[in-house]
Image (cartoon, rainbow, N blue to C red; front, side, top):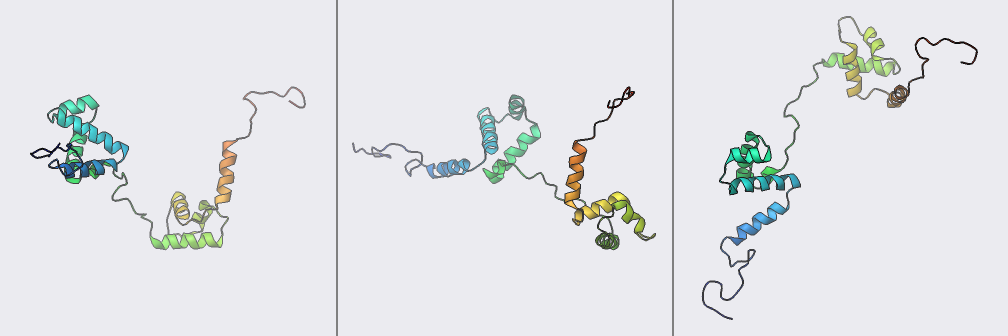
Length: 178
């Protein structure tokens, strides 16, 4: 069946070269296949949004999403199709750096290495008077520098999970062996 015209008796295919623009459709379908499930769900929501005349209020009410979130997804889809709909890191861009001066840190580390069994409270007492620092700050320094004995810490945690049984309040011993 040879015919004249554009398709010359062939079937119209989406992924072939016959249909104008099919290459970009195929590329979009391929890229959409490589995204996560959550990004696909967002893409479906935005398709629904586009099919309903791009009404943000209707879309947000229907899916129970915030208007700002929907606008953000639309903007990200336009700029970074389709990777823009992927989950982004929630890690903060900036986070606080420890405010303890390095002189104090080095002194705490030196004392801990000299007396490894001593607690943060004893180390606090041993520090010179001009180096004022709380015991909890010393504990954070020891933790950050990995100078806390892990084995002892685990032993204490296990002991805390199984506290000793106590007699009930007001218990009177009536005979030996109670």
